[in-house]
Picture 1 (cartoon, rainbow, N blue to C red):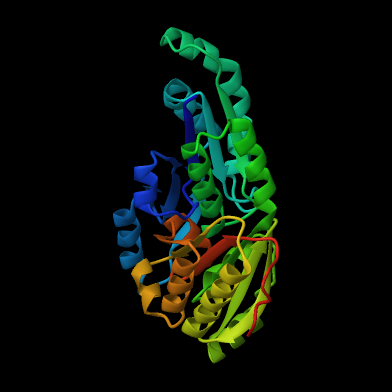
Picture 2 (picture 1 turned 45 degrees about the vertical axis):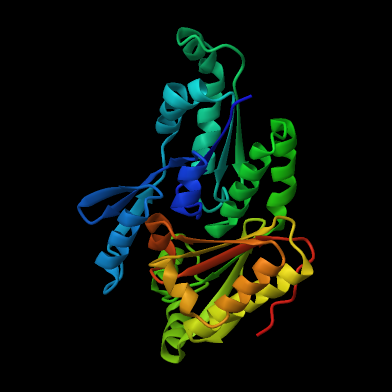
Length: 315
């Protein structure tokens, strides 16, 4: 059986990982004033975006996910011919429109694929599984990594499906924003006043950075730490401790809305890298999608792992 993998563009995995494993990326559009730019997982275009906006906050008014029709066209014109089963992994359905769009598109795809395959002399059934990762940014990247591992091992799709459903609730994604402006503005647009002007002003005055953890689609601040590098260091040290405690998937994903190589210079990264190597855990460093940074701000770090027995986050 030919099994394929597709991801939401805001699933943070490296460009090399995407190309080496023939992963399909559903792009999204960023609206920058009177310009519209489509982004996939290409690091060059992402870095160009960050260079352009590094000195000022983004003027983007909104982002547009791959539409229902676009998903239908991608599958019926390409994926149903190249694969017999496709896993489409998305951000949490509460954080991204992609899951809902893909779920709606799946009805048309599954009703129409037979005619398309028959017209192109492709025999046999086709199946599609849309996976809600219940997580954000580096989080669905962990599920994508595990999916690739299982496909390579030639595990049956029904078993892969169950494995992903079992793992998703145990993904813990940590985020450290460097500038709370985007989070405050986007939250206010959604009617969420968790970061009001007073809290934003105090955080800016004292250089306080929240550490936000997303698990089972719920995002909660778990710590407030002065200075970005110190907050990121704490997340790195926490991840190293969790590796020693044990992971369900031997991979830790890390992304940054900017040049991710910057993260290597922060205290704690070398210790995390050494711990990962000692325990056979892969560290995947990637660039955060501009689509994500519109909401969380340039200079944001995301780290994710999958585990049941969670190490306490120490501040």
